[in-house]
Image 1 (cartoon, rainbow, N blue to C red):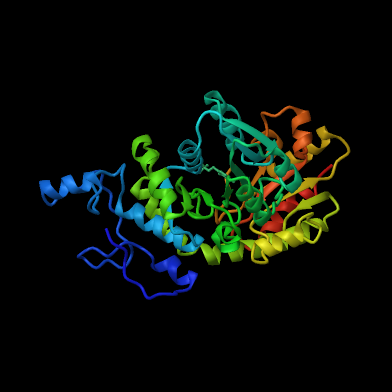
Image 2: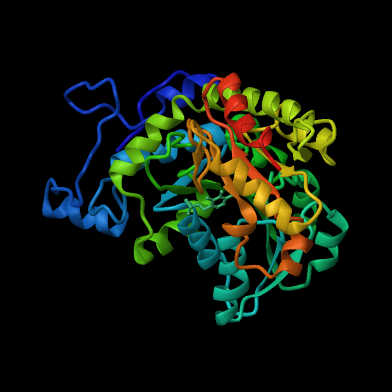
Length: 404
Ligand SMILES: *Cc1c(COP(=O)(O)O)cnc(C)c1O
């Protein structure tokens, strides 16, 4: 299916609402949802050409679907890459990337602050197949450099990270990777292409969990890899066709429509998060706030340079206490006192979601590992949504002002 014809040099705002496959014969203005698993072939000859790859055209939804194509083209346009490939979840995108690019004996360098399932997938699951890996501190470029070996194929970074919002220097890591003949992949979930376009800073692959800000309203799971046309066609597509980690057309449609409001949501949610971060920093029961937009953030300047001057919509804060037990009790009290905001392990929603990292995302770590990762018992992550900031503050105060 061909892309809708659009003028050259359109702005990203315009691409976010306009890029899609051609309209059907019915002239729908909102993109069609093609909920079909198979496609009727115009002739046996055409079918043969399509299966041989000599002619464009859909055959079976594991190999492609027009609604999924619309999402892929729109996301690629926003990230500034030649192409994108959609997957069923964010983890399926990482799975597809690693499975497509690595073989036994290859080596991956990645950060210790990455998403928990990413660490398990590389360090445990791919290790079973003889893929080696080194885990390094997120913001220490020298440590990334020292970890590179002759068999290193991928440097994989996530910035900012969850829940402490550590930032790494994308351009510096891209240089390291390329000097070593390796690729830099960036998990761009937290910043989204609105704040940060890793490929413009030298990255080769951008990974997304569409489940988060791309959908933006907590409805569906989705994922994607953005990269060159060559890498998508030659590396990822063949593996996906045979591996089957495809995005459902329905979920693709939801996320496609989500992209239309991504810019205004990210800006509005970042502004609210910044206001909340400044406010929390002043609260006597809060010992520390983690947010790239604050001047107290260790990589504040780099963050502002890399993230279009915005801090993103996720912040974390430590409830003040003398012992880990008291900190945990304090954090639980704040969370249990919420009446408006949600105690919910997701992020990227228009609804504000709060979680206690030490007992959820980082609950399987030993206390020593947790300390090393900087995750205290009083730490609360807040993925800021679109409620009025005064209502968010009032909901937090219910707990913060009644702490023992
Ligand atoms: C949620 C998330 C993922 C995984 O995405 P799923 O859609 O849940 O599979 C990967 N990286 C980051 C940073 C995430 O927040």
